Image (tube, rainbow, N blue to C red; front, side, top):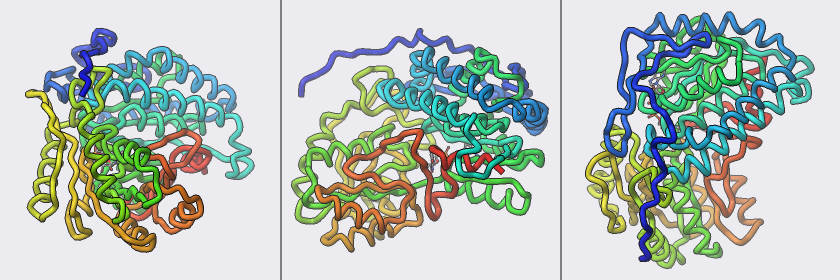
Length: 472
Ligand code: NAD
């Protein structure tokens, strides 16, 4: 294979402070405890970050409550100005943010630069456009904001999940307390600085950092009116229980185990690109990843030969190298989970294959992996691995493909590859998944709603539908 010379982006583009406080009422302030955030690619400490306790969360919610009357009373066109300003600052500072996100998360700079950051800015632009048109969004003639939104997000798309949560909340006149994940707090703290640069009134956005307990204080806080959570189904269940009967509104975006279905008339090379994008994009840390490949039996051999050939060209390594396709696994804990489930896949009899690949010595790494000979009973076909691991199953008829695709407790996304439009529409109609991609995969757009069926959660984010979760 033709070898590329290293093309690393400079780390010095972004200034990372040695310590970060909590962002409450427009100011950064200390907390009693702290925790460290590391670069998963080399395990070096990036910064020490405040760990918010119950009193800190209380102060943040109180600040958001104080800010609510004047923020919600602003004309929509005024709120839009702030959101447009935030979007433009994000564009201006996107190189810094892309480097920061790659350092804290481990994802390749190619993705932060070309996918995460453009989508983050697009979300703010999109919801800025809605702020003065809420009356025409189809939710009544005088839709009202709910109040204080408590938002908890995961580590796989830290800044993008922040944008999905904060942009619609602010556009609709709510104020926010957001908690980023404990392994990736830095881009949310950078965003706090963006809010100050945009002159956003103090208290409209508050960022509290910490682990699961901090999230729990936030979602259980009695003065929060709306809870928005993205993360694992297990934590989502706990939150649903704690919110039940309180009158708080709740949206949950949880896990997935998506089927990527390839029919025998699909263009193989394009399907292979879609399969690779579906499971190896962002190291497979994607809730809607195409982690189950369902391929029609008659083309299985040909497709797997092409897929393996394509996988040997994937570059795994330094997230800051512009040629890297697969970066570091986000944490030691996530690496352990991927390693364990993959070992179970082999023990249960599936055949494991990875291309030859040199993994760096330090940091958390996992080679792109496929399992063939997988049956529906295997744990790797049922459980979310949330890593660069693909389970391959076969089918003979469309009916069998649909049955296998729907045989999961999840229902977030699915993909269909075929040349026949009528087949695509007929199959899509029968898939129990929130998003169905046809002849593509992992395509996101702020105008299009996203969310799940069954244990993948409820409520929609994005598009006009995304406004509904923040309006009474
Ligand atoms: P997680 O549920 O462990 O953590 C998510 C967030 O919740 C973190 O900020 C964490 O600190 C916080 N948290 C943990 N325990 C909590 C509690 N008891 N109360 C309140 N907050 C708590 O999930 P994770 O490991 O960070 O993320 C991976 C999971 O997220 C995967 O299962 C993935 O499918 C899912 N995910 C879903 C979507 C989606 O849109 N549906 C998007 C991204 C990730």
